[in-house]
Length: 217
Image 1 (cartoon, rainbow, N blue to C red):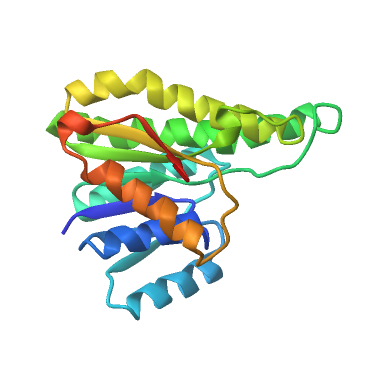
Image 2: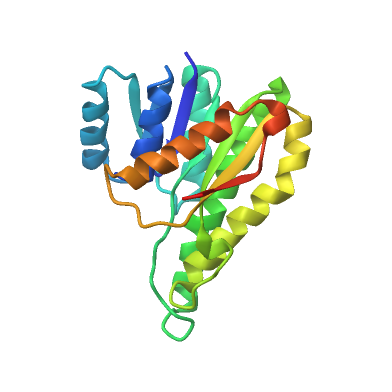
């Protein structure tokens, strides 16, 4: 059974994407800082017949993220798909945000993503297969002064994806992001639409691989 690791398994995009892959026969590993909410989401998916594991991770702690990747590989042998969906969604302008909180935001938005990609890609590149999916946003393309920290984080994710795409592709690993250009509520049409976009990126043949997709198109 293939393994899908979700980092930032929130009630919207995170859970919807995990469920989309579970519908295709994947074992899904849900992660969050909040164990109670995570357990509830896992039970809801198990009730539908899916294979679900749960692990606690703090995306604001880079050692925690790296350890999660190692533990998942040790338990299941390989991470076939990594989905990074964690984000600090702080609404703040340049004038309103303290430097200290900006650093904390980027630890989650970029540092944790880098730690996850670096950790999971090592085994993927060694075996010549694997997929890394990142939840991007239109703030990467059209940044917002009201969400400056998040805009910088999403731009950084997009830059990392674009920078690594060709090198990874040559070695059999697909890294890609979905630029989400819609408000996404839990268990919504939009959440399932983003999940479908991630599935299309994953299931595309090598010659059709792309570093990004935008939802809605």
